[in-house]
Length: 335
Image (cartoon, rainbow, N blue to C red; front, side, top):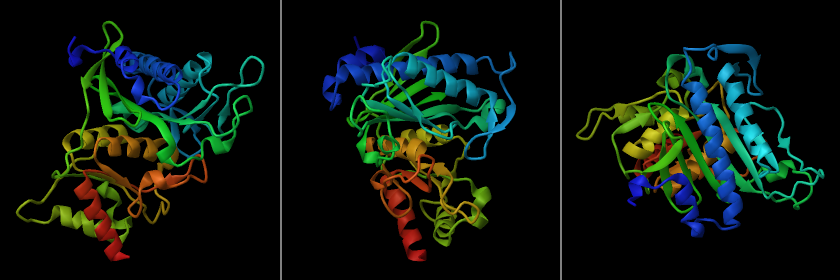
């Protein structure tokens, strides 16, 4: 069977060397995420046909207006992970506090915790634009059999055992890494199976694409403004092409495939940045690095930063290594 026809299940079983710890447990966890992704994908495909779009009149812990599909996706992933009894805790963008999961005897013996953004880019859902689920997986640091603690989640990204995303666009894709490269799988909705479609993804070292919300330009630090002007300057290899969707899953996945740089810097209105370190920046930093790219906060490697809060925000610069390094030089020079 060619690689192009390898299913995600076969791929997980056939690569036990990928897993530093228990192959069976982590495979079950990734399979649970795969299943929840299919449920969410099916619901998204009904948008415009049934009443699942629009807001519900509430906000999440970040003060962002919640969409109906935000709530659906959050519940789908939490229920799937809880019912399969394979995690001891979950942190979600949609929940103020961490979720501690207890076993039947109130002593959870599972070894992994999951951090997630259940539906990234949901502000675009009513416009039929690609959205996605972002996830990271850590091995707990608290003793097995005891209640999960916040320290189980507040680990630097370099301790992730797996990370990935599911994109709901023209097709549904699951892309993940366990620290041995990045592979992408596309869902065949007719039979509900993911097939290997993007083996060993590699970020091009250089490109001519930059991706940033330029509507915030006047609020960006001077170094970021200088870098944007560099990208726009008429030279032999420039100006670069601007591409920005406003859904991190869509923008970063394009950057990983086509090269370039995606950045969401701090601003006068958001001095700490907008993206969440734990379940947006760290998972994508892991993916980008495993694909040969680079991810920083403009000053240091994202995955070396120890979170201080489960919803901590962070600037993000990721993509082709040469482009990220150049952006960092502009930032350092301005300081």
